Image 1 (cartoon, helix red, strand yellow):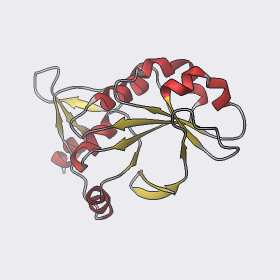
Image 2 (cartoon, one colour):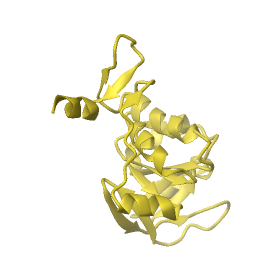
Image 3 (cartoon, helix red, strand yellow):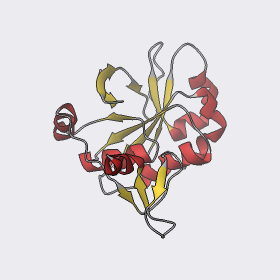
Length: 177
């Protein structure tokens, strides 16, 4: 079982990572690396199990487009908290392809990145750092209210006269109070 954080709550899920040439288990939900999935997609999409696709840093999220309507979970890997390629993968899935399913972050990231991940379209988090779990359970949320890059997944309003500067609607509501 793995602890997942989504929509302000923690819950447990069970997924089996099928790595390399591992045999496909007879039942249960599986997570498959993108390359292996693309080599034999129908093997993983048929049957009663759910299949999650793991997009590693450096994988091309675009290759998953033909299958997005049949996949309920895409897992985006963050191998280091300094590696931002997962942000790009999530934005491509949400903004360019309109993916409606769950995009889950996994790997080595810090609490300060969680709101920015949500802004890019990530909707759930598999957390490996105990300090991140502790902070989220304690109600910490490092809200970012001003942005220098607009995204298509969040409603924002301009911040001044610069077209690229944005501020969150949450900040605008608090200022009006």
